[in-house]
Amino acid sequence: QVQLVESGGGLVQPGGSLRLSCAASGFTFSSAAMSWYRQGPGKEREFLASSFRSGTRTNYETSVEGRFTISRDKAKTTLYLQMNNLSPEDTAIYYCNAKTIDDVAYWGQGTEVTVSS
Image (cartoon, rainbow, N blue to C red; front, side, top):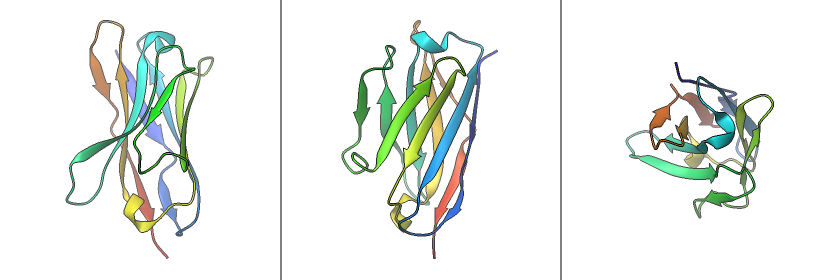
């Protein structure tokens, strides 16, 4: 059974940092393309960053490039998103996504991030 469990969200002040984690199980982590998405209040879910199967190639949405860093720990089968210089516009529920080698996509339940003073 595939499981993606996000954690690390919370309340942070503008300019602050958070690191989100996504613990993955039930599939071959090293072979999956892993991504982060978010959905802000009243907004559509949007793509943020991807780590491709090799883990060495990454891709970012323009608005977060340079502030957010996606990484994966193959030994811990965990995906991370380091978020720096956060602003209120980053307030959202953040979701982990896995796309397995047989092209099936899975979602976590999300972790909430609130950026406010």
